[in-house]
Amino acid sequence: MRNFFLLIIALLYITFSFAQAKKAEPPKQGWTSKGKISFLFNQSAFSNWVARGENTLAGNIGVNYNFNYLKAKVTWKNNVVSSYGLTKSKNTDFEKKTDDRFEFNSLLGIKAESNWYYSLLFNFKTQFTRGFKYSKDTNGKEIRTEHTNFFSPATFLLGPGMLWEKNENFKFNIAPATTKLVIVDRNFTLPKEAYFGVEEGKSTRLELGLSATGRLKIDLAENMSMENILNLYSNYLESPENIDIDYTMNLIMKINSHFTTNLIFQTIYDDNAFEGFQIREVFGLSFNYGF
Image: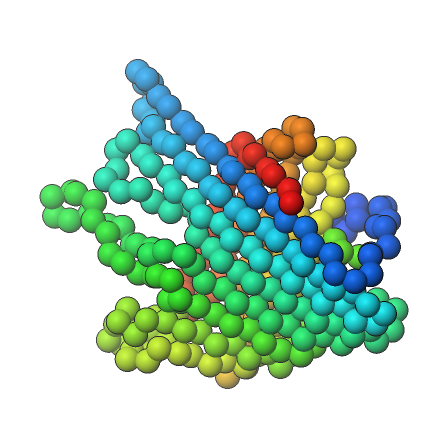
């Protein structure tokens, strides 16, 4: 994990260097809103390919909507992120999810001094549909077992802290007394095995810890931008040294006003869900519509 932290720090340092060179426009007062709908496609096909391959077709749809308020010393930023994706392979029996996410973030800030604000963080996260674990039976046939569903798990974060914001594209928030609530369907829990940290027969888990979040978006070239989002959480009540990590990098290469090539890389470390790093990577052509 130490090497992983060094990699993230190096990446953020490089993008920070780019960000320093660009000045953002002063934000508008009152309510502002901005949204984007994206359709991401990727496909592969093989015919008489000696090295072999698997025909696949995948698609993702995503909605990102921001509605913010700014007045005098008060700033209130709200963001809704939702995405869903499926992939179908010729040699498998099931359509499989490539993405399934619904997240709402809200951050209230009151100006302290310079770029610092007293803040209150709220975060809600779940998924839309059932998720499965895949395996094979004794005959080699692929089978699946339901593992997640809507509101199972669902997580809530709430905590006061301090926000440092240079501009809309460069900010971080530290909340040292953040409450985390995990909700699950108790039917998924197994004997002597915690389900997302929730014990057998229970449906909730309550934690208290430190939350640290940051966002850095920079322009690498005229038609290329990179967004980095990092979320950390340490539970004071149990194994505080096991820090939950959620890092996402979104590299956008603009073709024109509606089409982009997108590379999304996400890694999650949460030993209550999986003992190791979860990694997701999506690359494809995206159609975007702003509103």
